[in-house]
Image (cartoon, rainbow, N blue to C red; front, side):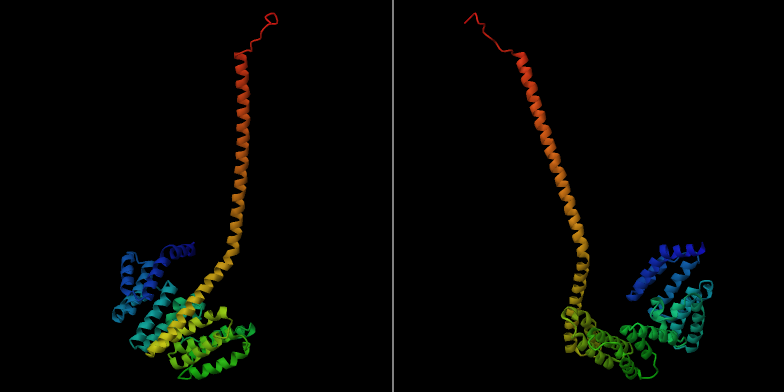
Length: 357
């Protein structure tokens, strides 16, 4: 019963409100988010109150007001021991604020508290690919938690089912966790080790593989390495059939645009942007066309049904009109006979007798 009540609380009231707040924070509309929080903060200090107060601490942190965020988060931290999810998230937010204010001892303390609570209620939160809600904290969190077993298990499954894309994701995650500046070299090694899982004729697969590598290096701020892999992704993507080119080239060109803009290469930015936007539009048009093609048989079938229904109603209407016409004709004929008989009875014919002749 308690679970049902909590579930209804989330679905009916809390989730729409917190999702709205998180969207505002994601769009950097921090003042609007703070305004929504203050307007909806209840007087009673229950789950909703502490959840919104946590959002307020997150908003103040995003605004760079760390000294204002800390007391708000500490208040939530001290009052949410009975709510493992709020407690863990508050600990991670406190760890993030202390990281931003260069307090490594406090960071480690709150991360350990968060780890113990997360393990109580949601083991999936340890996996970087699963729970989006905690993704912004995982860069810090991974320092204290080993995700290597999950990566090893993912690698085994990917090899077993020959999933090239999944292999690239796993290896890029491993490369991102390497110490020092060995990301690019080790990533190249990882890519070389999984090329055997993709047939050389699978140009699309190779393009996706190189784009994943480029994206991984981009996340590590290795723009030169990322551009190199983007060019390889474009090379392989250009070899796929014409109707699929836009799907494989849109993302690499758009990522290239962003990197070139960061590097201040204005002329190259324009070319990359023009290519990327045109491929993106073409890809969107193709996806819409495919969706229409998928829906067309259903619509055609529905159209035929409607056409048959219309024909049936026309036939019924025609038969009804014919019936009414016959009934009208019969009625007119019947009335005509009746009138004729009435006239003959009122005006009998006059006959001259034989004698008068």
